[in-house]
Length: 188
Picture 1 (cartoon, rainbow, N blue to C red):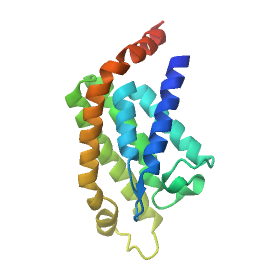
Picture 2 (cartoon, rainbow, N blue to C red):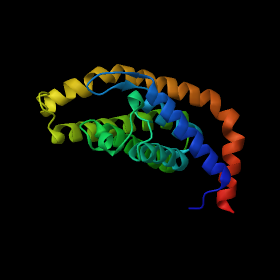
Picture 3 (cartoon, rainbow, N blue to C red):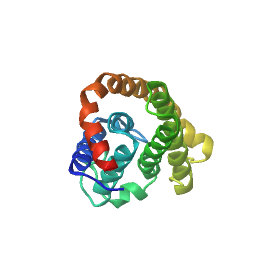
Picture 4 (spheres, one colour):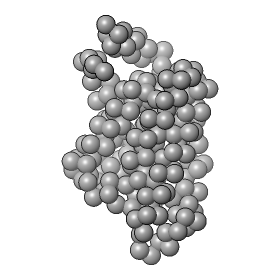
């Protein structure tokens, strides 16, 4: 898998977009952010391979200490902490979206279904991590974790999926030539 300069630019721009989305944050047990929206939009606009790479770059930047996570935080401790599973879950969400793209194409209905599937995977990974980490005082059994970390976020996340799908539908024609050129260079 060869990366061109255009691929790297698309990945860097998307990692930056995910970072900006993470800074839009409302503090809570699991902060309410726009990160999932950023991941969904990145994969929708630049495709699964580059969108997954952008998500990985975002996580690596945070792991080395750059303040890319919510609340301008960074460092490996955020990935290893009780809510780190949701951060790592973004990568799995992007991978699920990429997998669905490979098998079913890049149509809008597939994109929306892949966003929903990716969100479920992110919830599952993050909730399992939260329960296993055993946060003191949270009563972090599965039911408590779901009520604390998933249920309050379902409606906002559905809205993020709708917004990301709508923006992808409108912006894809504008970015299509740039992305197609990068794809064509990959085939050479």
